[in-house]
Image (tube, rainbow, N blue to C red; front, side, top):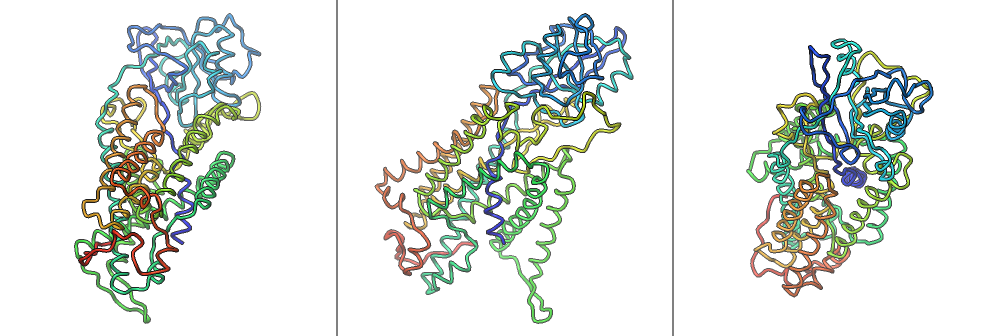
Length: 536
């Protein structure tokens, strides 16, 4: 069951890609009163003033009775030189913006009942739209109408905020710790299995009982990546159905991973593991208590997954446990398999982020659409009018495949709610599989200094630092695998080449070879002294 879940969950690990989400402020006044509201815009599309004093003030025209997918029924004299506010739906953001621009409007505000996302389009649409475009919450506009009536003067601006936030340091700590712990645990399990073989255990039985899942066939790697591509496309077309399947899978897999991680720590600390018998069946007291705690944590996350203020703590806890357990469980048998898998996943990531916008109708990449959900672009609604619900709609479901840490510097800004620094699980797991292989290779050659493991961890750290540095300098989210894969692969190959072990490192080992003999596959793995077992 666990192995089947692992194969299914692998496709989730590279679905997320950071995108540039820019928040701004809508300042509304009528001469005597003033109030500010949150807006979301795409700075590839819109440039806003950095302060209220430099922002130009325009009168606002309420066109909430139309979706503005065409100019019928709208007089240019009414909207020329003014800010328009229309409802979201029926056509894309760019289409609404082009109609507003043709009518002579200075700015377009789109009121949304759904989660605010930065309005996206392809590069050709960006070049056509010359007026600012932003999304605001529908309930905020209703509140503004109650306060100001129809006589509203508005200004849009985006105060500069510090690009370097303490949350980035926390994210770096989480990512490198998760990769290092998962890789070290993988090597510890390999050492334990080698010790069992050395003590006369049957290798075939040992592998049969092992929870590890070895990937040693290039064909299987290619088929696995092809399967991931197929599931991603299915998610694109059937998101509203499959999202709940993946949420359920994540709850089960993360609870199991958290159990395995905590249980291994308790074994390491030497905690007692009492048992009792019921109808000739033995039950472990510690395991039952631990399973209850892990399942409860997973259930609480599942129930409150859309709560933004505190649920990120449980999601990160479950995510760290899931990534560590995944790196420990999946064993890549050779550096050749590592190169094939990481290279294919890098191409997969780049293709679905940067290439697919040229093929989709709304110009949004399939990766971003799946990661953000259906609200990543303009949506279709029947008819020319929109029915607005009295209360806000249920938050849009998103895939639980990211680490989230609140931006500490933005906590005082309550207009747009909490803002997060995010990192996809795939940016941890995919390079982490290579780190795990390096850790096992150190065991195979009896390298007590763990040179391969440590060098790959350092390469991962440098790669993730480079990712965040480029993101901060460019002001845009980055596909982390674009930097992590070259850093880790090149570093590992360089270490093997300098040590004269490239042939062994490239070939590695496989379950077929191990099952054919109890002799270690690599000559360097024959220690002259007993190997100390480590908890696994």
